[in-house]
Length: 331
Ligand code: SAM
Image (cartoon, rainbow, N blue to C red; front, top):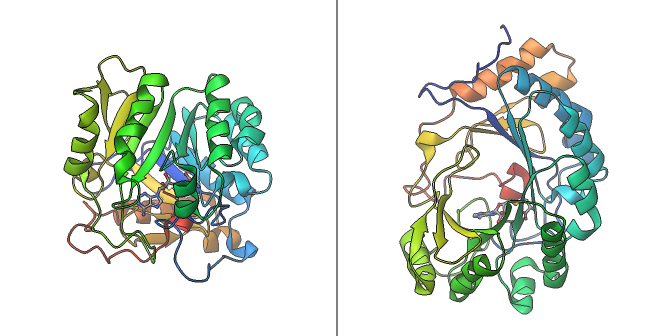
């Protein structure tokens, strides 16, 4: 099979140019909506792709038309030498957008190196402004640390900083307006994400809140005005309050899926190319890679994942459809 640019076009004519990479299934938090309940299953170190293996897959992806990469996890910053890896990534030719998703716990320590590596865009998860609630959600008393990390990134000029809020009915739904109000004070993009039923997580007893309810709570602050879409926009619908310097966004993968515009593939920490976050469809790329196969064989794995990419996910119809765990797939 020939490797040629722009080759990753699926059966529904979607051009896949965005690879999200989970570099570890380890995390320094245990968020109730993300980590499976019960004893944590951890991959053996040998199961997890080595950096040089990830880089080889990325180089092949670039030759196939991947231009955009997001590094995620688990928590990417807990993996040893993550910043060295980011620096190598920043030097690769052919990528025009490299971003990082982090819980922010280690951000103060690493922000200078993240910036030096050329990471321009940062997503930081923060579901509450209440320290005790933060500990209840994540299992760790780290709110102050995360807030300091966000401030450090802001003071060092990172833009945009996107704050990801997973909406948890009965847990942080009373704080949505307060979180959205950060956009008056900071140029942050506060993004409200519908809880997705993935794996064996323990969200809460109440039914997940969906976009219309989430939006109406935030609109208590004022009218939301739509913001024009930009080239690097993902699935978030973007809005702004009059007088705000930041933005508010909604990611409603469950109630209003955005599958028709999906341009993503995922590389899981254990070396599978996953066609869709919300469907257990993946192709093993680690086995042929470790067997010393040619780049063209590994490109075939990309093609098979692309071929199997579903037109849309079925989470709304069957919320039990996904067995994979977010922590290893990478959100
Ligand atoms: N550790 C990093 C972090 O906390 O941002 C990166 C990994 S985390 C899996 C990536 C994103 O997935 C986070 O923004 C997180 O809030 C989101 N996420 C995890 N589980 C989710 C769920 N069940 N529903 C919706 N979003 C979820």
